[in-house]
Image (cartoon, rainbow, N blue to C red; front, side, top):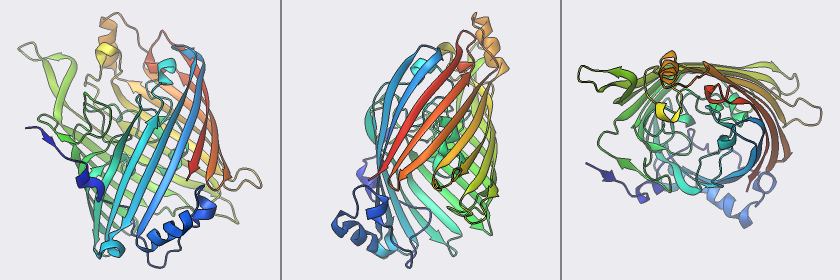
Length: 427
């Protein structure tokens, strides 16, 4: 039975991972944002437990050689996020809420020119639309060691996450390349969340967290707007992560984690059939490991210095993720990278980085393509070099260059070069 849920239910839902402390110093909006304190309205809302964040990203990108063809595009994403301390706002102790809405501008695709399996830009969605990304409620207990979250949720906000990889523009440094194309409409990651329940327990740096989400975020037949549906056959996505994290925001990175994920609904095998000649139905599943560290901190400022990350994950090698459309079935991917904050004297808030991602096509997929007369390579590798310059507290400019080897594992495509720049504004 099809169920449609109105978005109004979620407007008041949900939350920031840590509640606002009474003694926490209010942000300096006049210095940190372009629009300032709104005549004191932001301070007044903050005192009541409400923080409003407005951001805009604009990316100008060009495929200069190789890939499918040369071409350039402009992509943009505008976002509003509302954090609410419901203890201050409504007397609900240890309860917080979070609502996030974003708008994508520009319906052209840089990847139509490049043809990369992993993608090129992490704000590209292929359509111009606005939608709710997250809207959820969180209740903490046991001295904030235990938290339960429910509502519209994106798993890449807490699972399979390394903060140091967030510098880069290519998509797999958010959700990884092997997990991003799984499920019927992808997992609940940018730009679509899904109805979910998440439970987390943390103590002395160790934590365990698990989430159960709708198996099909959004609407397969309509990418415009927000769609919250629980249709027959959707199934669920379950993900569990165990880790150790003593990172301090703005100071140091120290995280190690391992995770498992599985869809309950079954998907067609690439080639295997049962005794009736029908494709075998299999469950998509995988695991991942990750780590990030501060490798070298500046003596006078621990927030500056060299940090790095490494991530590796697997996915089912048998699942058909688009054989007819030459969408590779990737059975593993791995990435690693370095970033350095304050590389140059006098540029303490700037960050330079280099990262590499390799996505591996399963042998079963390549054999199936060969039977169709198509030749595919075993992997695609992308190298990204970027530099984020903090021109003002509210304005950043980030040029980058990517080199894509074996785009989409397609032997007919030449290696590609992509250049681009991102402008990010906090309003």
